Length: 123
Image (tube, rainbow, N blue to C red):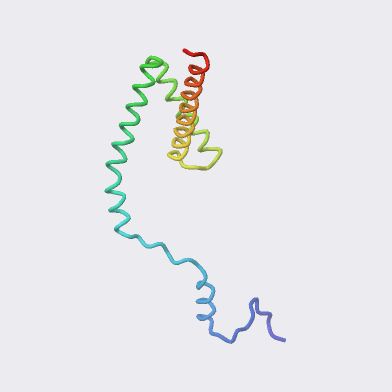
């Protein structure tokens, strides 16, 4: 009696069977230079935009709440982004974008509520 073979005998060579096993795996990722060039070209405007947005946020918070309030608000935003990142698994930039979008929606609704209140009260 022959020894048991853990796979079906397809009549092929051992190299052929090894090639069949790796045939369904994904090819290794290729490093394309155009991706690096695109990232290098997009990075300076993105950094300038982030710096301008950060400066405008700081000035808005500082004028509205004073310097200690601005520091507390920015630390709170960073802590909220870290909490969202920890529990959802999304990237930190995505968490900050989510906070920014929710803040924008809340701001728009507050403005509409104030306009509606002014229209109703006649003031």
